[in-house]
Length: 378
Image (cartoon, rainbow, N blue to C red; front, side, top):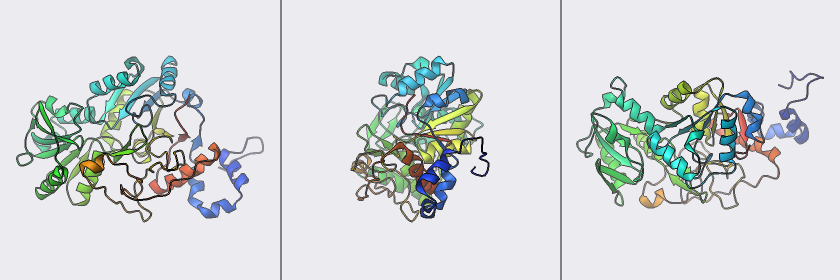
């Protein structure tokens, strides 16, 4: 990039950062230059509006926190809609799309803003309803672990029945807090029951279909809740067969890309799910830094938990799947230990430091967004 700079063209932003910090900065983390040179910091989505025809947004951590819109999210989506852009939602929610639309409306996003809403639950519903898909070959009897508030889509699939763990063909993982005894009978899990389900499923080598690959989700108070992706990762690590539906896996991107038009930009807050999934699908991405990685990037308070996927040696440390842990406030998504003490990243002195902080995080994940924005602003 530096060699391609001519006397008549302005030097790239990367050049300015190197000049300001000096070449000594490269010796601290040579890989950071590689990642910095591949992404661009933007102040607002308006800078990108003319470059893309379709905008595909993640939900949690980008548009809302589960209770209210975040930052300028409603304004950003409304402004793009007024420009005639195709706008959709791409979410790892295990609920059907119709449920997600109603929830978005209750939070403050008028349904007419979105041309489509794609959820992992909607994607899984379609895969199981397609009798020619590899998912229909899993069998017709499923044991369902869910979240207790979104109706399980499994009750709407013709030929799919709810049954016990002893009699099922596979485990359908939609949440971690409740189990489905019948379509109209969803009961909370008892203390230790989730671990028991995991052990008994492993003993039978039952396939687990995880319809929310997220490991954690950011709550309104910036704490984290453990998600089904963590159960699935532990299950796979123990030798159990796992299939995923949702980001970063391809089925859900096939839906989103097939409905969008022209040049597509995905907008998300997770390197492991949003940015990785977009990269694998051949799509550009905008990383919103104020979501799941907010404290890793120095955007949280001094006591905020951090969010990444491995410890310093590149090894994953599984969370304890107890009811208490599911609602616990882990101090580090990097260590995956709810009781670990991890020093938070220092607050950034200026936005100019953000690309370097993101570059270091990208180096650990091995994936880089096309664009970076501190928070979702127009």
